[in-house]
Image 1 (tube, chains in turn brown, blue):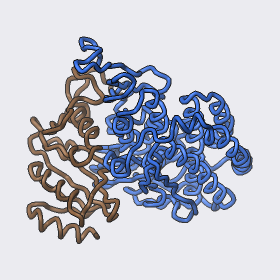
Image 2 (cartoon, rainbow over the protein chains, first blue to last red; image 1 turned 180 degrees about the vertical axis):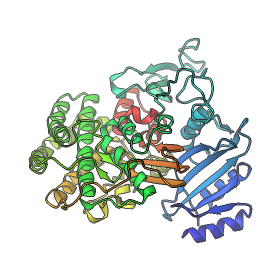
Image 3 (tube, rainbow over the protein chains, first blue to last red; image 1 turned 30 degrees about the vertical axis):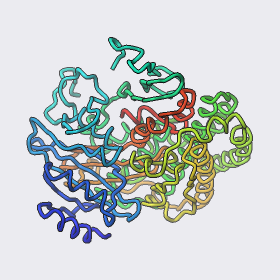
Image 4 (cartoon, rainbow over the protein chains, first blue to last red; image 1 turned 90 degrees about the horizontal axis):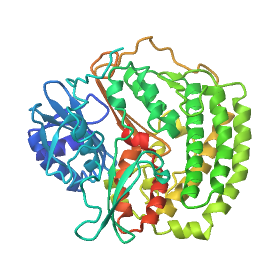
Length: 151
Length: 373
């Protein structure tokens, strides 16, 4: 499907979603609460069939966090980017997608480790790189490391 | 992270052992906690982070020229291709047109890198499975590629040759003749490679039917590169989303349907020949002209997001830059191939014997600094 057709089909299913087409891919902006049903539809419906989640990350915008999911369909050969806004930066929570794509398991643990986003219903949510006792979340913009020396 | 305070034998009678972080067959500081029933693997839990340097955080305070050099230290065997990915992503943001000569040089270097990386892998796979000779054979040919790298880039492993807009210097006057000599040498050795490992009965028994992963699982786990192509998943970025002029070149995407260690082995063996084929097409046809486009001293990407993917020796590397218009990236994410490939290890190895774990790990071809970043 072309980005226009995907946009049309998604907006029929999820009228609250907004769109951003300035970049390379079609961006669908949604709220963290609406993410899970959207992801299930994008994976299971034959016309979408997004079977390959190739990038999962998070961005700290200081006022809120945004989860970014890059997805590709191997059979239909189209790409989509889903951005879920997490408004509460002090207690960020979002539903996991690792029951839909296995690769999300490790990537969500990485985001949990470095951004502190709690993934609800994740089977094994532990820090992946840092020690369990590590204080703070390094990729947050307000993270301060006492040992860091500015050059 | 440690086993302190935990029982070594679980309630079900499973035996818990640690492999690594200092273990020759993990090819770096990878720590695997393995649950065993006799010799059979029941569960694997990788513990990562022994070499985590947070390159993504460091890059947020570096300029668009400087952050590229840190990526040589991720997948150090594909250092040039990592640099290329970053340079391409910055060029995409700046909308710089790279001269044809620079593109050709980049591809030549990238394929030489792939060749040397696969040769190292081939030697190590032999070593892991008990054959010592391949290691020496592989390093003999690899050495001549490293010498070419040193002559043109000034470094053997961490080349740092790609810059936004092209390459740092023009190629060395000896480059053409040395590459041709090396290719001639490597071509004559391929049969030697095949004879010593591919047809070996012990090697086939250690790899055939071991570490199976289906195409659906490979996609779901985000496997890329030879790991996925061994299961018949078409995922060669050079073919699907060509960059730097790969669309003008002739080469095949190698697919095997076996899904086991042997299939992954065969994919890499055939890819080496394809790399040689690509270099042969280009080496006499390097266009004349500039090796670097004119760019400003201080690079500033416009506000927005840029994503670039390339095919490294291990799979798909994605560089995702979020820019707020400043001279350094607001957020940068590396989607590294090894991180996703490693997550499929448990799927491949559960139910096999512990001796097979070594064969599986060596055919995934893990580079740990790329996992940890």
